[in-house]
Amino acid sequence: MKQLIVLAAILPLMLIFMAQYTLDQKNSATISILQEQVYTAKEKAKQEGCFTEEIKNELKENISRLLDIDKEEINIDATESRQYRINYFDPSRKRGIIHYSVSVPIKKIMAGGNIMGIGKDKNTAVYTVSGSTASEYLPE
Image 1 (cartoon, rainbow, N blue to C red):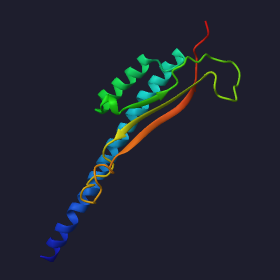
Image 2 (image 1 turned 45 degrees about the vertical axis):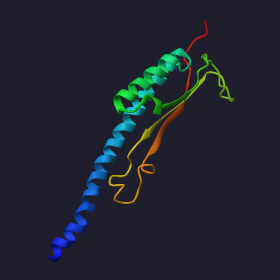
Image 3 (image 1 turned 180 degrees about the horizontal axis):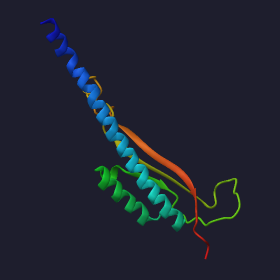
Image 4 (image 1 turned 90 degrees about the vertical axis):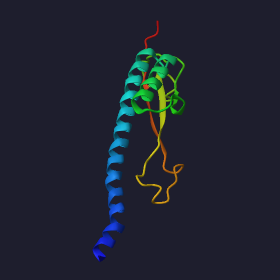
């Protein structure tokens, strides 16, 4: 009887560990998909010289579709003015460089958060992919 009582107390905690592993795998896949989509958009922006509205809208559409996230929750901050390719080093990094930052919410970090006293508002995070790349757009 004593073992049954201990099992009843420990089993839910052990199941949380298994659920956490699964949730970590899901979040890792989400991050991987996001990084892949941002990389693809960055390569298009290199050819165009900036993140055009078309590239940004396509990126939002793909992220929204693949990750089942509302488009309003996706934040894209990127260079919108056309940058031309330069053949020298610019120490100010103001010419020829495209900067970008894409943020999406991850809505569940801890499995069993309610059991552990973590509310829904604290069981979320924002994952951001940011970087810079050299423009390949040639002046006409």
